[in-house]
Every structure is written in structure tokens, then in C-alpha cells.
Image: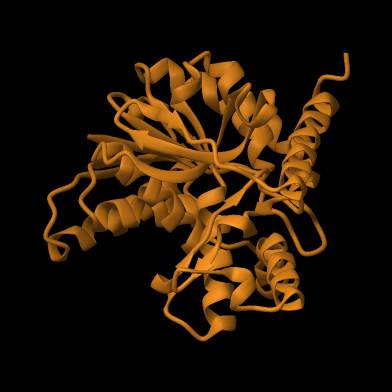
Length: 307
């Protein structure tokens, strides 16, 4: 297998390193700053002899390096700064996505695209439109990361092991994301029997603001370790054809009562990309929140093409 990564910033280079660490396949790291991509690729390659893998890592600014890539992860885009929301990036990153995807498609044949750039759900929509790939081969990474954050906060609040927590976050990758409380358990007990309503509300809000919290602390960048791990969870499920169920942003065509919009839902991932969309039951409140997410994505898309 071969993995392409477009964007050699913190997220992209960490994805490349994790992929090399796990020996998932040869890696091509592409960035507008070719020397930076080449330097990081060389650094990762020099770590490989100690990793027990045999992967080849190359980097540069030439998209031809992606030739033969089975999966292409797109992380390129402008990161947000303190005080900015993901939505503030929509116009700038839409232009970047529209310039990247044609070059990716020119040098690859029917790849699976994993989109990481923000605002996530809108960027996946653009990548799908421009690439003209089947819907099951264009996937956004969002819910995996949001779920990791929610599980972290829940485990710390409940003073339990991370493995004791079963949770999932759906909806858009933004302030309207929907931690699915009705399906969340700690040590197989419903969340409402472990934590108070006030505690749960605070943890939901912290999850919704999870990225902004890190941006505020870093001041000159955004999260990258956890996002890269989330990407690798998806890449590994696809390469190993594991059929693992993960929350990802995909095109809905009637599922969850939504039509023609990319938003986060549980999907089964395999070698062809999205093998199936899993429909979970929701409370009336969760349905309302999920619908608000979908409408928010639609509104941002309309901003890009008001006509």
C-alpha cells in the first residue's frame, strides 16, 4: 500500500510519522514548501531502521510523488488562531482545496481521500465535488478526533480507565457537534447513572470547544498529535479492511433524515472506503441537534456559492 499526505505541517508530518511507525505502507509527503516536506520525509526515513519496518518515505513539492497512492490524506490549509472558529477559515481553505484536489487526481487512480482541513465538512464537500470520486471514497476525519476528546474528558471526570468509556460524537466538526449521550456508557452503565446532568453538560461543552482550547494554549498553532492518531485509525481500518465502525464525515442520502450533505455519522471502513453507514437511534433532542449540524454545513456551502 502507498499513502499520500498533502500538507507537511504538524498534522501531516505527524500522520506520516505514525504511518511509518506502524509500517502501513510507503509514504509520499507533499507540500507547497518542497524543502520542508523533503526534510521531514528524510527525518522520518532515518527513524525507520529502528522501527522494525521497511517503508520508504519521500517528500517534496511535486504531486507526481503521489503516483500509485491508494489513500491520500489532505491536511493542507490555513490553521486557525486564538479567537477564530473553524468556520472563519472557509473561504481561504476552500480555495486551497480546489487547487489541491485536481493535482491529486491527476497523479492517482481512484484513490480514497481522507480530508482533515477545516471547516471539515465543507472541505469534504468540495473534495467530493472536484474529484468526482464515488461518495464512499471521500471521507472526512472529525468524529474520530471529537470522540477521542470526549472519552478523555469522561474518563478523567469519572476517575476510570479510558477503556471503561464507550462514547461517540456525531454531527459537524464544530461547535454544534453532537456527543451522543444516549449511547454513552461508563463501565457498561448509562452515563446519566455515573455523572450528574451538570457534569455531563460541562464535558459536552468542553468537547465542542476542544480544538479551541488547544489553540488558545498553543497560541501559534492547533492540535496535531490527537488529529494524526485519529487519521491513522481511519487509514489502518481501510488498509487492513477491518470493517471497524468509526464516526466520519460522509455524504448522506437519506440516512438520519438528511439529504445531500456531508456530516459525521458512524461508518464501517474497509478497503473500498465507506463500506456502510450505521444508523443509530437518537433521542428527539439529539435528532434536533444533528439536524442543526447538517443545516449549518449547508449554510456554509451556500456562502461559497450564493447563486
